[in-house]
Image (cartoon, rainbow, N blue to C red):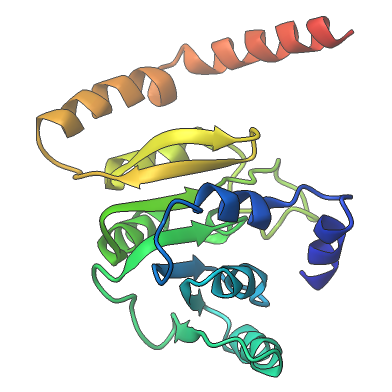
Length: 213
């Protein structure tokens, strides 16, 4: 994880954390941020430095301990949630980041529902699905198709707003019930669940490859 952060800092890898932080620049200073699946604390370190009250949440106690060690050495004040010990608080956060995280979660429906409950009304979520084909090397990546995952996220009450550089999606928190939710469910079925969708994706990939050649 630290090596990947170095690759981002040296322009070798996509700088996802700075891009997401730039997308949050309209939020007032002191807004509450949660990094879900916080790893070594890179995202929270950046958000805290920009004036957010940042919280790190992870299922790995040792990873949280290491992140706390790293951030405390630099004088970065943050909060820490061990997800094996307690649940996320309700209605606490203005922005949640879940970068390269959700594909490692087996109980995704319950997890995204908890993220929805943790966001304040009008809050935003930044998330992506790094799906990969099944293989020994890809074992930590539990999914090979992002469509069912996006369906679960939308049904939990997250409406996609924009895709940043084709890498990570910004979602706004909406209510998962009511007339608008029913409309979104019909739309999402056509986009994400329709039997014709895989064929559409195949044609789209083919036309993109032809246009590049």
